Image (cartoon, helix red, strand yellow):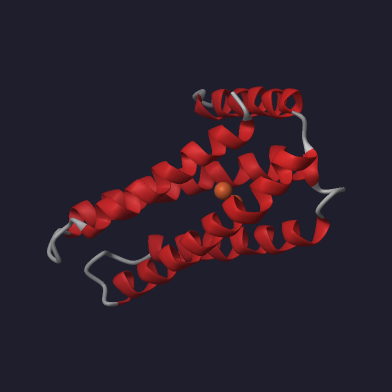
Amino acid sequence: MDILDALLQEHQVIRDLFDRYDQLGPRSHAERRALFHVIRAELESHHPGEEEILYPAIRAAHPGHLDERVEEHRVVRRLLAEIALLGPEDKAFPVKFLVLRENVEHHLREEELELYERARASLSSREREDLGRALAAARGRAAEPSS
Ligand SMILES: [Fe+2]
Ligand SMILES: [Fe+2]
């Protein structure tokens, strides 16, 4: 699969998870915590796929934008780590979760409108397919139980 299509599918999964959060009642603490951990796992697998496979392939053509996107990944990673330390009944939880969501939504938009478009222009469809295979292989390795 074209790596950009694969990454766009992951963006949609992440957006759907955030939407699901909206449907939880204010007292659904256990569900909030569980959903947060699913969102965290999705983001922590999505970001390395981009940083290790897509970004290096387009770095020479588009250096500036990538630095900004990598920095956004770092901010999101820090927020995820901070939220993981809080109980969902903690007052700071919904506040930090909202900031996380705003950061992630901004980031996904920037990638889709700029970075992925540039990648589509600077990589051939053959290259995008090869990168998609590399991404799928990396996902397969990550899913294997480590011994
Ligand atoms: Fe990203
Ligand atoms: Fe992304």
